[in-house]
Image 1 (cartoon, protein in one colour):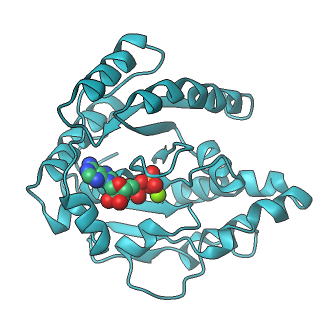
Image 2 (cartoon, rainbow, N blue to C red; image 1 turned 45 degrees about the vertical axis):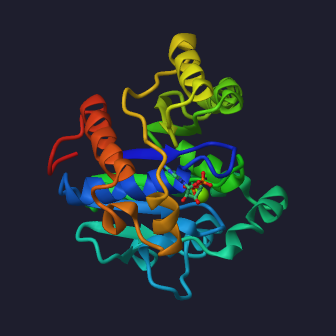
Length: 261
Ligand SMILES: Nc1ncnc2c1ncn2[C@@H]1O[C@H](COP(=O)(O)OP(=O)(O)O)[C@@H](O)[C@H]1O
Ligand SMILES: [Mg+2]
């Protein structure tokens, strides 16, 4: 089961949009069995993919209160796509983990992944991370094959990528095979600062940058308001098409095949 964590310590760069679109396109266009894990206490991905409700979510797993993943995963309207939701109880986790069993928390998602692999439950797991390197985020990264870093296409984001890559690299002492799959440029639009920043990222060469960029369009915030994936809200808008092109690029790069991970 291929597993990707969508990570950036900055908020508002497109982590949730990317996680939701990646999971959606893998389930629909690629006909894979996909689990989206929401590791952010803001629960934005949960709100986009599931109806309003009270869910026992990742917090219960990370606290060791629930160990069977099928008690937590919930089917969405999209065939093949399930969600392991987040709830507000994720906020308190770091305070508890500071005094409690941080090791168990860090291992929780990795152990869940192993159980899912044994059961052949899913082809791909996508984890939407919070905008910090909290215990939930570390647990997500340690359970992943590779990290995907969405960035805004401005100079500040471009120069911040180096620090993030160093922080991710520091987790290799716990997870030696961890890779950065690539940086995904989001909210691209024609302007000198955007084009210079993207050129800087590509020329810097410290981390791979996907060829595909995601264009900026109001259809994405509209879809957020409507609590829908942009793939469903406006399937032919630029960003929806860009996400499909990017998933094809990612699938090729990561050896994910149609109908089979
Ligand atoms: N390609 C895009 N074009 C326009 N707005 C976007 C695009 N991608 C994301 N957004 C908007 O930016 C905001 C932050 O996106 P989000 O995915 O929630 O970021 P994060 O999870 O990193 O905080 C949301 O309001 C979203 O609708
Ligand atoms: Mg988010």
